[in-house]
Amino acid sequence: MTDPTPPSDPDAPERTGADEEYEDDEPRNPFDNPWFLPLLVGGFALWCGWDGFVSNKYLDDPSTLWFNRIGFVVLGAWAAWLVARARREGQGTSQDQT
Image (cartoon, rainbow, N blue to C red; front, side, top):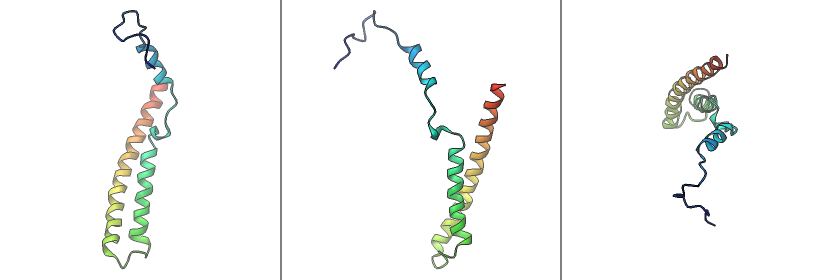
């Protein structure tokens, strides 16, 4: 089915303002939470740290052992940066509400 009013029709209703207001009223996606990515990356960092330093599972395979150890450091640093960014975002929204 096609729209009965062509886009070049000057009598066609404008929808710009109503659509923008509707998009702001939509519920947020859980993935939009500023703490989602830091917790996910931090979980992977802990997993790599466990396999690289605590568990005896990969002692016979040094490449996997070093991958987990390096992954722990890289993912841990990235998670710390994401936590700092999420805290700043959370503090910025709380100051705007008061």
